[in-house]
Image (cartoon, rainbow, N blue to C red; front, side):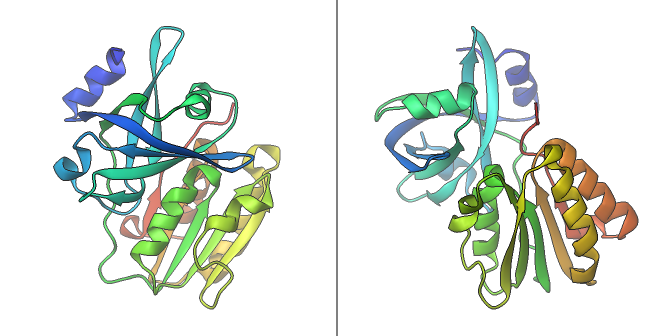
Length: 239
């Protein structure tokens, strides 16, 4: 399958293409499916970093369609990793549901990048949802001793259960129901983030694109969070 104009653009931006092969599949919950892959040589070529993600290519009525997914437990020595798919109507979810051992999928690495702050922040202030949960886990694991508050939006409270070290000393998950297209999350974070913020905090936001933009603008323009202390990336678009 060709990748169309998107693939050409990614090539111009030095995107690297690989083919992944399914090793196993597992239903984690009603809404979450995990696939394990061999990496087609990717990890030895690119290395790894916290919150690393790749673009997977799917066919959509004969046209290329790409979606980004975070690597879970990448193992460069073995050349393996997993991915978690939130199950909802769509090409990516349909493919993940039906994927069997030995199936392959094309992928492009371009655009990913995250460096652990040096010096470490005083605390992590994180906003996310089921789509960014693997990245949240990777972020927390990269700074295991750093306190964190995570505002986690979901229609199912159990979706936050896989976040490591939650509800322990120094790390807390605030569950926020998804309502009004993310408006409740925006209001909750806007009202509570200022009280948590200090000069050495690190703010990390990854939820739907509109919500991410609203909260990033709030953090930057109204709370004066400097760019080096703020990471924001829309993980999906609400329909």
